[in-house]
Structure formats: structure tokens, C-alpha cells
Image 1: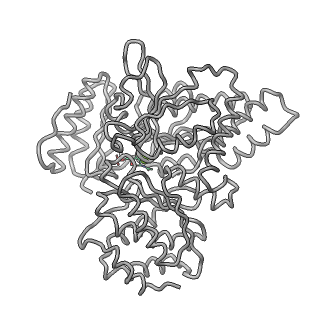
Image 2 (image 1 turned 60 degrees about the vertical axis):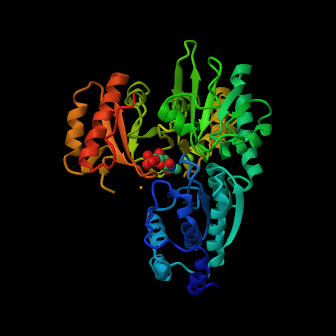
Image 3 (image 1 turned 60 degrees about the horizontal axis):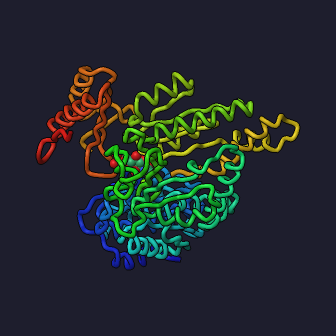
Length: 505
Ligand code: 16G
Ligand code: MG
């Protein structure tokens, strides 16, 4: 049995730079890779405590997602593949910031608060993205796990959804799926192939998809998955990391923010279906170029709408009375929210930015469709909904049309990886209104009033050292001008440093 005395000795190999303060943000810690060695080690320690506390396998993913290649990060994954419980995020921050001499006492206070039994066995599964820094940082996690005598399985290079899947498999005794990457490909491809069999019309052009792998893990893993798809989907993977730099001029974030084609896919043909992943492959956005050369983006809002239409139709055909809802964030385009509520008559709920908030809300419904505009999302089926669907799919006494619709819904459940995954500006109302600094919200309100169909809000980023500004208006140029005006107010009232923001168009 390890005692905290030994930990303090081992920790000497992963020293914390004195005075460095980092925060467990929206999706874990993110910072320059060279600042993270001690954080990784300590997250290894914390994962062991969390595992002992929950008597379950805990996941640790080393990645900084869409951030630049020089950054890295780490997030912990809770027993059913969901994001770490909020109280433990606070422990993570305390542990990461404890100076060397305080490490033992912080660990002891977590143990006491949570009544963790040190005699419990602990299991941690870990994975990492393709960043050059990730291998050594993953080793620091392993050192932390080992310092507390935890057992671990290192899945090496895997996407974030794959690591979430592994955690879920381990904790459901592989009822969810086999806890290997092959098991992941098998589960997804079987459901996908069963769905395509049920789709009568499947022409050649709909089988092809250009993929921008962001020069990251998504490209590698998709190439591994492709043989399982039996040519029902032919992938042309670009930005596979052979030449380009991770997330640089490519990837889902670049395409969504710049609203243009990524490098590596600049010459796609008219109407060719194309998509981009982010650096750890838990975001996707689709796009195409039309006959007039115009770029069209199908972001998370559009994806959520299409999926909801698809599911609603199937629920009607299956004659299943299940409550469906869509969960969005303040970044969802206002027209998508109006369309879903007013035309489709599906209720929409708005929550804070970050997968964990959307995921949590979506769990309240029979069928919860959640997507951030930036392309993070999935669909959650409640256990009751899933049972009713699976029962109907097997019920030979029902009309064939009902059974087929239920089978399609069943395959959808299996295809969707249902596992999921928080300064001077303080916001409330799902990040849409600022309460501090004083006067900022009033200024934003009066700027918004100058335009029609307009909205604007600001929020401190949870992953980078910036303030995000969102603006919407009747025309592109009004939206751009509004965004610029808001940025000037933020700069003045929130104590901006450096040059004043400039209008980029
Ligand atoms: C993280 C979140 C994402 C959110 C983004 C906002 C997860 C897995 N990821 O990437 O949901 O949209 O942060 O970043 O929760 P920002 O705070 O820098 O705008
Ligand atoms: Mg990501």
C-alpha cells in the first residue's frame, strides 16, 4: 500500500513550477505543454482516488483538442463515459495548484472529504492525441497512477470518443461493447451497415465523403475504421498528419470560425460532401460548395436539426410516444432555434457552453438531441426509451412498418456513441448576460438595439486566454459591425491590454 510519504518522493520527478496556477476549465486543464508535467502526474493521482471512490474504472485523456499543437491538456472521464463530477473538478484544481510541500495535505483532505477507502482497487484507462508532447505527458499520468498503486491500461493513440467508449465498456462489464479499438469499430460498423441495408436508395455519390482529419488522431482512426465499412462509405482522408501541422489552417474549429474550406480540401468539386474533425475527433462539421462556388456549412445547429427531423419521422412511423427535445447553447444561431421550436414544434433548451452541460440537460428527456454550434454533440436515449424501441423491434405481432422504424431507431442507438463527455467577466443565463464588470451588459444591450434580428453576448473562454464575442444581425456586415462594436466595449470596460480590437473585414 502506497502512503503519501512515498508520493512526495516520486513527485520529485514531476515538480510543479512554484507559483504556477492553472484551472480545470470547460474540458479539463489546457496550457502550453511544457507547463503540464506536474498536472499530468497529479491527475494520475486524482484518477486513482476517483476510481477508489466510485469503485469504477476512470478515464484520463491527454489532449488539447482544437488548441494549437504547442498546447496540451488533460481531462478525466467518469464511470459511464461522462465528464468528471463538478466537485472533483474543484479537487483537480486544488491538486494541480498545490505547492510541493502542500501536496500531501491536499490529497489527505480529498480523501477525508470524500471518505475514500484506500484499500479499494483502482483502475485507470488512458489515451492520448497525436501531439508530440502527449507521449511524455501520458507517462507522467502513469507515474501518478502507479505512485498510488493503481492499475492502468494505456490505450495509446485514441480519439476522445474512443477513450470515453473504453471507460463505458469497462464499467458495464463489456455489456456496452468490447473494450478494444477493434470492439469500437465493430460496434459502430455493424450498426452502420444494418442501417444502410434498411435504406433503399444509396447511390454512389452518397457513399463518398471527403474528410479533413485536422492532421490529428481522427485521420488515423478513420483509416483504421474504413475497412469495416465494406465500401458503403468511401472515405478520402485529407490532412492526415503526413505533412501538415495539427489544427493549423484546418480542422473543425478553423472551418467553423473562418467559414471557409480548410487547406488540403481547397479544390473539392461542386456538391462533394466534405467534413472536418477537430484535433481529438470529438467535433465534426460538414460542408460543400454549390454550383455557384458558394461555401455552405452544416454546423452543429444544422446537424441537430437534421437528426431531429430524422428521429421525429421514425418515432411517428413507429407510433412511439416519446418526448424528444433539443439542447443548444447561446452560440446556436437564432434561426435554428426558431425553426426547431416553431416549425418542428420540438422544445429547445439553452444551457452553458461545454459538453457536460448539454449532456446533463439531455438526460432529462426520452430522446435528448444535443449539439453545440461548433460540432460537439450526440443523441441520448433514456433507458426506458431504449427498452421500448428494442421491444417493438422484436414484436412480430406489430405492423411491419412500425417494426422497421423501430429497427432503424435501434441501429441509430447503437451507431451513436452515447457517452459524453467552467475571471473578470462573469456571466449568467446560460452565458448570455454579463453581471460583471458593471455596465458592460447595458452597453451591449444598447448596441444590439441598433440592428434588427440581432443578438450579441460575451463570455470568458474556458480553454484559451481570450474573451469570446458572439454577434448576430440581419446582414453579414451588420453582424460584423456589431461584433466589432461589442469588442470595443469589452476592451474598454474589461481592462483590455495591447492594441484595440480592429474590424477584420
Ligand atoms: C471545450 C468544450 C466545448 C466548448 C469549448 C468552448 C468539451 C468536451 N469541450 O472544447 O464543449 O464548446 O470548450 O471553448 O466540453 P471556449 O471556452 O474556449 O470558447
Ligand atoms: Mg475536441
